[in-house]
Length: 319
Image (cartoon, rainbow, N blue to C red; front, side, top):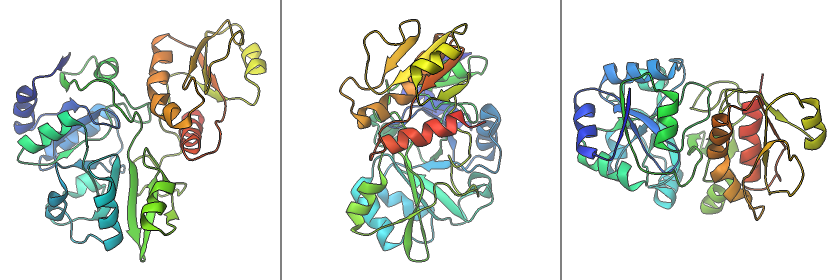
């Protein structure tokens, strides 16, 4: 049974006893446990039904704690740390002996980030250890952006979830690393490739489509709702193909009389793709709660933020 709470001291006691909790971040909600507890780490993998080849992200309270877990911070990565942390960005860095290979899926790099959410910050500051905290969803499903959505996923688990309201970014963190003298992008999230290149005043290597699982979020199918998701060139024609089904339609901007027999969600009344990106996951959860049979959407404008939406939709629709 899930318990949603704002009692941070209760959550701390669970974590100190090698338990697992749900916690808010500015990106999405996570399942958190002590970095130094194999018991908690294994429980997280089990609750999520997550393969052990998929590494976890370590959450820390401030920049100074990074050096406690890694052997090297390249100068370019330090520039990005200073520019974007605390915030929705994760750094893939060479781990030291303190970090279990269970966390890194046997790889030599560990993913580390500093969340900016005030409750996550308060929790991490009060703890004597970092937290591993992948998104609080079953493997390959849509990440939750509210405590209630965590409860919807894990209602049969004995889990306490710290309620921090709606996640402000609403999408996962960006993941960057460093190879052969260049910054590498492994997952594009709320902080865009363009913003990173602007800060560095240099191009970076984009490995988001690489087959090898080097960082979280690199599977071909990911971020998927429980029902099929179809990306259509003509939504009205696609709706007619499924007229005997309960249909959800996901649009960038609202429309008036179109798709009137469907449950329609507009991600941005003004057609703003940054706003749409932040609303994407919450909209998918709303459609799931309507017991929709099928979700129909379209590709979004391929701009700085629309391209990230499209990447998530393509992964969600992958069969």
